[in-house]
Image 1 (cartoon, rainbow, N blue to C red):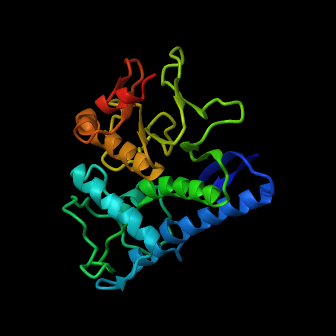
Image 2: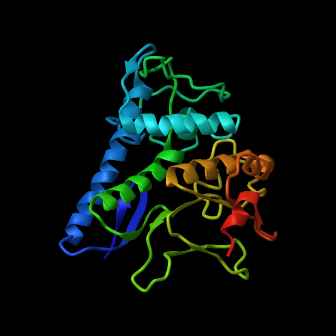
Length: 289
């Protein structure tokens, strides 16, 4: 069965081998239900979402986060710490100022970038506290988490094999009916160079960069090189799309430090730049056929 639709400002798709008794409507309801659950927590475009209510809250307001927020936030903090802020989940105001967020929030205008110095919101009791004027934006990790939730929704229906994606971030499980893997082609920025073909079996893939830039050439990735010539795209392979999504963003934002950073943390990553030979991290060698 093939399904597709729109969510989180982009498109989604799923291709699955479905056991008897499971209908296309069953799959659609499970998948879209997982999308709505992610949006309810992480959407900065939905004024009623958990993250939007936190961003708009007065200084000193405390919230009790649910399991989804705790999972994503703890991973975001870990990667922000490891990358010395190249991945920064507290850049919501600047992201909005660049035109990649809602304009009618009533929130204060962006003034100056704040360096990452560690988790600014988590209390010892597990609650999170708004320190005042802090805007979180977890879009660079929550979309990947959303793909993982799609996969969990299908596994809960005992679907044995599938390929799911949101906005070009993929997770493949099992194999196709013909015994072949779920194949993913990673496009080269040079049209005369063949794509990288990946067998997506129990693997997550996310790509970040400016291959499909928008918004008058402004990168949506805070900290990305302003000239956008260091890397056209960076693809990361991981056990979950949440991890692949966050690391792809972090490495792209890191610029010249991206490859050393990937090697330092054993991140399988492919670096592609127009007019230049592709490069890869040491950890990616284990994936080569």
